[in-house]
Image 1 (tube, rainbow, N blue to C red):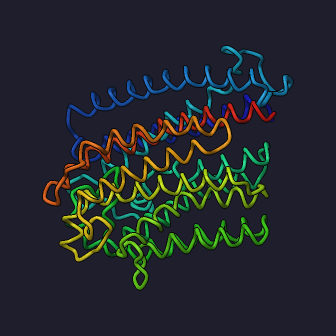
Image 2 (image 1 turned 30 degrees about the vertical axis):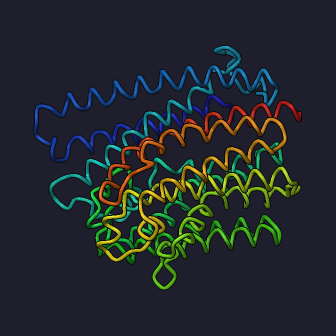
Length: 408
């Protein structure tokens, strides 16, 4: 199969899915039967077009850089030969497929959840919304990067593991959380959109079953592919996902342990990737993982500040409800600062990553003197934090490319 045929299959599937999701989204209340629906659809597709234009430019630039550095190559027999820079024209199919399908899916999920009627009766739509698609990359990326930088090749383990940490893992992590946090989520205005679903009680048990069914097979396959180190890291990762929210454990209600467990959610995929790849454990690698762990603790602590009021109303404890909004924000700033300084002690080009801590500190610092009564205002910074992760991922990718080129 040529790259062109594979690319066309992706595009065809994306166009069908994107058109179907978009049509369904704008055909439902509050747009059904209104003159504004066609205009809304038009604006949607214009946004898709602009997004693809931006992605096309980025694809042309960074594919050309990576191909120029000889990080990978294409068999001339399997491509048309048309290029933008050094990037084969086939490479543009994948950003096109993503930008056509994913916005339609997101609009469909969020529009359905905000309709006046209880439209989200289906398990799958609510489960997808609960899994926080905007944050999928935060767990898949560390796993894929750890494996690729260690093995320098793409095999079935990389593909299966990346998919697992992209969707099923997040489905379990956030789905279980939304089930056991239902009472506090009722009082939380953030729920029902980009920051998670408000799962209806009749879907709680099915959600837990769905999390188990979609996770256990992947865990077994990945354990089969690795040795004892992979087994231990997978077990710790899976336990942290369950223990954070499940009744009887509820690590999220144990101050400090809540931030430690939450950080484990994001660092453990990288550890699993390193274990499966058989990476050599060096002081530099341990410092890097420690810096990543401190970053994760800071992110959780700062995120907990905005929920102080609904958590207290529901009787839920957290690092923020116990030590207060002001101290929690200051702790987050210090943790990000230490994480950045730690990267200065890693081998080159690791120290370049120290700069990544700066935008997080700048985003958090204005709330240095926030109080418990004004804690909800930090949601503005938290929403910026979500998008800062994409910018940080971009910078980390550039550092990885540099690392790859230096060791090739």
